Image 1 (cartoon, rainbow, N blue to C red):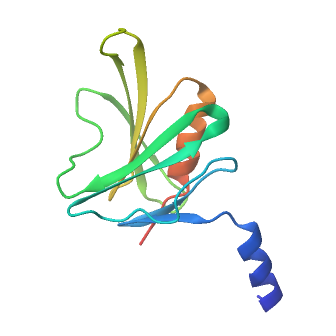
Image 2 (cartoon, helix red, strand yellow):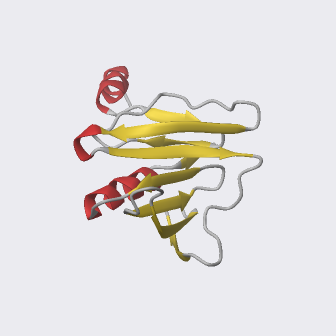
Length: 136
């Protein structure tokens, strides 16, 4: 690859968000920090997709258990690099207003993605983020 091609790639490729254990790449139109740092024994950051009003939490750490418990419906898919992505969906009633809250969680291994989803487009954005995961 030529120097000019490398420079062009730097300006075209969206930046990746690095966190302990890997990195992800936010979809076009979403805003993500360049780095999510470990604070004591955990990390937490968010990817914001303003057009969809969607916030996707990116978190993990030593004291955080598996994303999907045995009682929840879960599905395991394999990413293009062969790594398993365990996903589950939960529904719960909000405190106070009793509104139904639907949440999608994806376990990446060293970290998890979690978002309250309101539409199929929201689900696709979370899954695109999960599919972009690259381990360290």
